[in-house]
Structure formats: structure tokens, C-alpha cells
Image 1 (tube, rainbow, N blue to C red):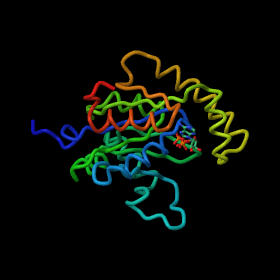
Image 2: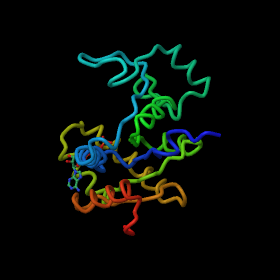
Image 3: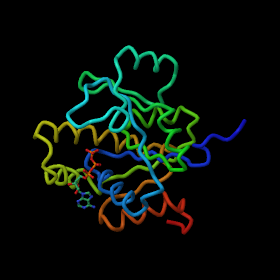
Length: 198
Ligand SMILES: Nc1ncnc2c1ncn2[C@@H]1O[C@H](COP(=O)(O)OP(=O)(O)OP(=O)(O)O)[C@@H](O)[C@H]1O
């Protein structure tokens, strides 16, 4: 069988509790390596917001189209949030790899479980906060969530942390204590596949 683009450019799955610093670290990574990485464009059944373009922020689809693709096993992972369906298609990830880029998937625990069951050949990185107490401080410091949302995220964080402790789920765990140290560890593992032993 001819090797697929994702075998050559193995996708990276980054997960970790909300507030563990995934966006912060990925932003740096993309800025430092502007031509190396890409995000896949997800499908959603929610309506586009002002300024959003079909095929750029999301592939906006109807519920029927979405379910049809799901039945055809076209999604690597999909889930429902707030009454809408969201999913990452195999094609979206292949499209990134076909451009010669490494696809980065920033997904939550249930999605990780689903990706694990595919032939995607992904590499799995878990970004952990130093503790739940510090996670709580950071979530509050970010100032984007209501008290209720912070409590919900902290509860979810506990199960994400427990899941990450299971053997054989992640290829690499990085604790985001000092940001520069954590960034270097992530960058090294992703770019050099940990060749210098970190
Ligand atoms: N090492 C660090 N030290 C202190 N603050 C940090 C560190 N890393 C990230 N932060 C801060 O913590 C907050 C949460 O980070 P960020 O938004 O990147 O998390 P996330 O994992 O992407 O969350 P979500 O899954 O909700 O998008 C931000 O305000 C960020 O500036």
C-alpha cells in the first residue's frame, strides 16, 4: 500500500485539561516554525459567526450531511457540545499532511480515545498543569470563564488527569510549570522527536 501523507508527516495530538496551556504553547510553536504545522479544519453543525468563512474556521454542514459522513466513517473523532455536532474528518487531516505539514490536533479526552482507535499513526502529547490548585489560579487569571464554567473545567480536569495516568495512552507528558521550560520540552519532542533525550 502506498504510504499516506500522514504516515510521512505524523499528526500530533495535544490534549490536557482546559487551562493547562495548550493554546499558549501552540501559538509559540506555530510562530517559531511558521511553515511546519497546520491545524485541520473541523466540521460543525453550528451556524457561522460573523466573519467566519466556510472551509477556514470550520466546514459548516447540515446535521444530515454530518451524520452521513459519520455513517461513512469519515470522522476521526466527533462529539456534541451545546447542542451542536463537531468533528475532525480524516480528509481534513490528510489535507494538512498533503501540504507537507504536520497536523496538530488540539482535542479533549473523549476525542483522544477515538483517535487511538484509528490508523492515523498520530503521536500523543499530554500537557499537564503542575497541580489542580495552580490550574484553578490560571483559569481564574485568564478571566474568560464564569465561576460555574471554572468549576466545570476543574471537575473535568480531574478525570483528564486520571486518564493520562493510564499506561500507554500518551507518548509524552509535559508538565507546564515554568512556561519556557515546558515550551522547550514540547518543541523538542515535536520537532526533533525527543532526539536529545528530553
Ligand atoms: N507556565 C505557565 N505559567 C503561568 N501561566 C500560564 C502558563 N501557561 C499558560 N498560562 C496561562 O494560563 C491560562 C490558560 O492557558 P491556555 O488558554 O493556553 O490553556 P488551554 O489549555 O489552551 O485552555 P483551553 O483548553 O480552555 O483552550 C492563560 O491565561 C495562560 O496565559
